[in-house]
Image 1 (cartoon, one colour):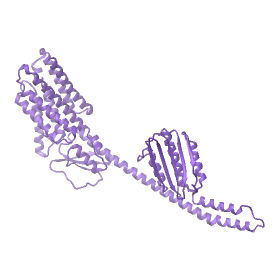
Image 2 (image 1 turned 30 degrees about the horizontal axis):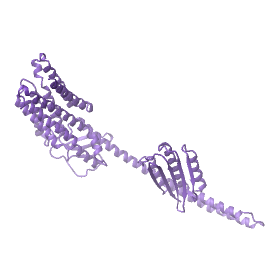
Image 3 (image 1 turned 90 degrees about the vertical axis):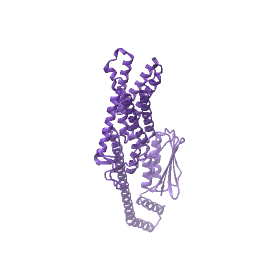
Image 4 (image 1 turned 45 degrees about the horizontal axis):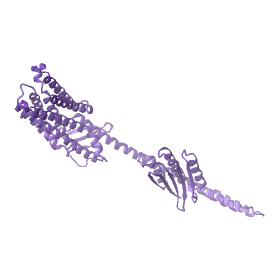
Length: 493
């Protein structure tokens, strides 16, 4: 007796937990309230059978109400999970007949649960019909979680219906053989229903996680996979469909609100989106993907505009440098020749006069071409190293010669950012900055002894460095491991 009471309490707790879990994920889900109601009816029946004095005609009539509530939850969930009774292929009058059949099955479930009018054959027929509806949902289930859920529903329903009918006439001494399967069947069926409802609630996560979405076609495949509808088609505003596909026989067209983008049209199996929370989830997935595409397009357009602006600035700088070089050659050059002629006419030569004139000519040519002498780049890098909060050692290997101004600025920018990243992110204790040059290019290398882990993200700082260096025809390489991070920038002369 004590064991039977404990089993009843556990079964009621499972019913209550299944309903509470469903309502927690979907606060307005009627199936959750059906499961909670089944738990309440179960505990009411437990109290009535524990205290015979409480038994009355009304209480006896409601003793098995949990059966009707649980059958209602099974049928409602199965119909929304797939074609079921009301959602299959077909429309018009045939669809209405199916809906009436679903309603009749639910009503018969409640009738079979109320004593003393319920008969064994009615319980058996209604239970078998509910198990058949759940079995059809099991056949159409694709996700492993959904298959497990519907297996529990079908097996649990079959077990408790069998225990309530075929085993009901067992002798009192064999009562446990009927009560134990009944309790297990009721609990398994409730858990299966809750899992099926929670699985439907996660359609958005499954669509975004299990399928790599790279555009409307991938989104369509994702939704078709998680909803179990191979004929599903998605039409987005402003996107030409891959093929001319119209609604097939028995299909439905649902309009999804995408806000400023307008409406998307989803062609799907009739009854598939009758579940309003599921429809909201699908709509949210489509909206997220469309918004992400819009954002990607805007970022790409902004990036192209920035690159175009940079190209215009570089072109303007090159034109200005060319004009300045021409001005120096046309205006300053003749003056220097006049000075040479005047010096040559002197009775006594001026020491180092010719060498000074040549130096002046060289520096004017470098300035006109927009080039920086190595001393300017060295001083800028020395300033970067001196202002670092992490001890930084600067090595100037020489041979850098002169460098175009924009390329020199790019190297200084890389050095400053790499040193700053070592300070903020890598927990480095020391940074080394080295500048090398050869006849073809100048190379800057920045290494820190931090924890590594530097990753180049689409909108991250390393991508910005690469863009800056490549804009001046240079290259950037980044290597990062447990021994630290090394950034190497190389620009042509």
